[in-house]
Length: 246
Ligand code: PXP
Image (cartoon, rainbow, N blue to C red; front, top):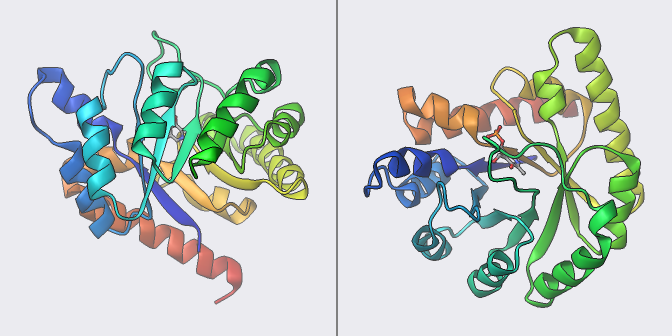
C-alpha cells in the first residue's frame, strides 16, 4: 500500500499569522495520525515562517509513526536534524522569497557538499530523501551522493492545464521512477497533489510514499484534519486496490 505523508506546515502558518499558540500543529499531527497518516512531514525553514524549533522538539515526542523533516542543506538546520533524529529528512532547495518549494534540489551542482551531509545524517540512522525534478542527471547524482530515497517533484504534473501536457509530465515521471528503481533508489512523490489529481498519478507510477500538504489542510478547514486525512487515505487505498485488480 502506498504510504501517505501529510505535510502540516500550513497549520503553523495560520498560527504564525498572529504569533499566538493556536492552531497548534502538534495537535494537528496527532489528529492526522488518527485519520490514517503514515508519515508526518514538517519543513523547518531557515526563516521560521511556519514551523518553529519548539514544534520540532514536540513533534519528535508525539509522532510515533514516521517523522519526515523537510529542510535545506544549511548547517544550522542539519545540526537540528541530527539532534532531533527524525526517521527521514527530505532535502529541498530553499529561497527566502518563494511561497512554497519551487523546483527540485540541484544535486548535480552540489554533489560534494551533499555527499558529506547525506553521510552525516546516515551515520545517525536518518534516512535521506532528495526532492528532485524527474531528470536523469539529478536521479543519477542522487544515487552518487548516497541518498536512499528520491522524492519526485510532481508540481509540473499538478499544474498541467490540459490532457496533452498532463500526459507529457506523466511520461517524465514514469521514466524517472524507472531509472531510479534500476539504480536501487526508493521513490516517493509529492507537491501540488490534490483529491482530484492523485488518482491519475497513482495509476501511472509506482512510488512508496505520497507527500501531500496544501490540499489536505485546505479541506481540513471545512471538515477537520482527521476527516480530511482519512478521505485522502481512502482515495489512495481505493486506487491501490484498483491497480491490483481487486
Ligand atoms: N514535498 C515537498 C518536498 C514539499 O516541499 C512540499 C511542500 O511543502 C510538499 C511535498 C507538499 O506539497 P503540497 O503542499 O503542494 O501538497
